[in-house]
Length: 227
Image (tube, rainbow, N blue to C red; front, side, top):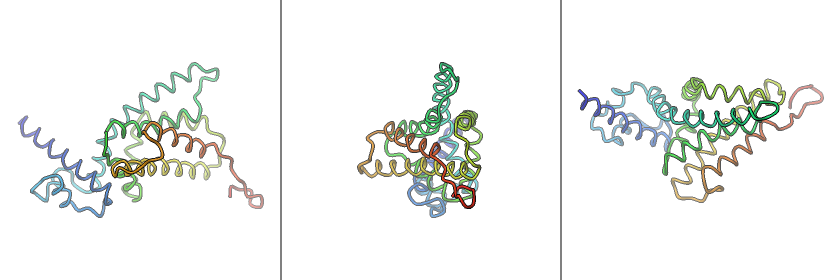
């Protein structure tokens, strides 16, 4: 029984690894279950469906494969931010501190995986499809640490109209995902990158995302609303 379980687990891992790479390089719906099976070294073309069910289930499994490792990084970073905040007069962290938790939890995970990696490009592909994007967001919302980080960020953000807040949330998310994907692709193809390490790349992203959140809001004088 133990041998069979180990064999099943190994097969599942091979399928997840192959699917993540193919989805990252070609897009989720451009890749068939048969292609994933072949890339995973499985002679049975039904192996993907047998082990994971639908393509959406396979995407969810890939997200969960990385979620625990990202969450560990996030909890550590959160503890550092909350610990530092306790030593301030206000007892709160700044926007940049919370943004750092969001960015470095992902970039430190990617750095720990080595080169090449495919998860950032996989995430970028998933984010382009509304149904698959919902899977990734739903899984993210199960993270207690992420909820604490987002709440901390909301507490120290300037007052923003709801539409502006939603727009900047989208901007920040897209910038994080797609800039990581772009760097990951460059590293995989041995191309030059603006920053030499994931740590330095994260610093640039934190600067940019903090600027997005704290930028002034331009008002339409005639309409009395953000333009």
